[in-house]
Each structure stands twice: as C-alpha cells, then as structure tokens.
Amino acid sequence: MQKLIAKATLAASIAASTGANATGLPVIDVANLAQTTVSALQSVKTEVYENTNIIYQYKMMANQLLQATGLDADALTEQTSSISDNINDLQTYGAALKDLYGGVSDSADYLHRVQSMVSSSGKTSSQWFQDQASLLASGDKTAKNLFNLGSKVFSNTEALAKRRKQIQEKTNLTPTAQATAQTTNQMLDVLASQNSDVLRLMSTRAQADAAKEQQANAEATEKTEAMKGIVAEQDRQLQQIRSTVYTRDYRNQ
Image (cartoon, rainbow, N blue to C red; front, side, top):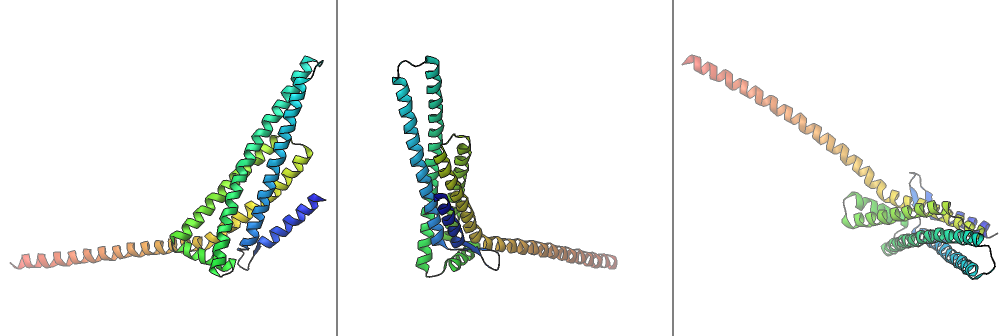
C-alpha cells in the first residue's frame, strides 16, 4: 500500500512540476520542483537511517557470536566473516548515501534560491526563465553565474546518484531496505529529469542565439573576404594603369 501511495505521489509530482508548451520546451513550476527535490532528499535520508540501523544490528549479531560458547570454531569464523563483509558493504553504501544527501541538499538550496528570485520578480516561472535565457544569451554575468552554478550542482548530484546506484546493485540489502532503495531510485530519476529541464530551458535561447551569432560571423567573414578580393582587384588595375602611363611617358622622352 505504501509503495502505491509513493508511486501516486511521484506521478503527481512529475505532472505538477513539468509540462511542455507549444514550442516543445518544458514549462516549469519552480515551487513544485523544489518540493520534489525535498521529497527526494527525504527518501535518501530514510535510506541513511535504515542503513545505519541494519549496520548496528549486524554488529550486535557479531558481538553475540563472539561471546557465544560451545560453537564449532570453523562455523563461527565463517559466520563472523560473512557478517563482517556485510557490514563493510553497507558502510560503503552508507558513505555513498551521505554524499548523495549532500548533493541533493545543494540542489534543493539552488532551487529554493531560484524560487525566491522568481517570487521577487513578480513574474511567472515561465516568464522568469525566458528573461534569464535572454540575459544569458546577451552575456549577462549574473545570469551566466546562476546557470553555471545550476549546471555544477545538478551534474554533481547526478554523478553521486549514479555512484549510489552502482553500489546499491552490488550490495545485499534486506527486503525492506531494497523497497526503500527502489523508491529512492524513482525519486532520483525524476530529479535528474527535472534538473535537465531547468538547464535546457535556461540554455535553449542562448543556444539559438549562439547559432545565429555563428551564422552572422560566417557571413561577415565571407563579406570581408569578398571585399579583400575587390580591393586586391582594384589595386591590380591601378598598378596596371600606372604601369601603362609610366611606359608612355618613358617612350615620349
């Protein structure tokens, strides 16, 4: 039941956060994106908590085995070694989770900052993003810094999410931990998609204007080369005229 509720919440979050307009560009509601990020952050936090508890339980089991008496020495060594391996794997996974928590926290902070800027502007999210795209295309330093920061934060979060998933797939998780991890996977997929939409919306105008600028530069270069050709031809003709006049003057002397 909880998994169904989580999926329903996830689907509603996706629908509310992003859509598409007639141009095919994403329409973004920053408030909902920030909330989705906070939900992903909570999911990772839950995993950290559960992973820590499981590690604690394994350590308790190891201590009980060490204190046990009358057990076969080989069997005891094997069980202790197996538990130790599980603890090491879970600690590695826990470290990846904590790193990811920091990355998602940075994403949430960034989106809250953007949300505050949108609210202060008195414009809709769509209008604000269009303004930022125009400013970015014109070389505005503030817009460029904001875009670069978002790109850096989102790229780092994506890298940390991939690392966590790689470790997760190699870690022997309990059924409960596996279910929690699956929910986190879904939230992180949404997070990656929405972050990509934010950067794409901010950069689309800049990319279009960059293409126009590149075409304009090519045309200017072509005109310059053509003008050089004309000037060179004029110089050649002038030299020919001067040569003719000089030859005539020389013969008349």
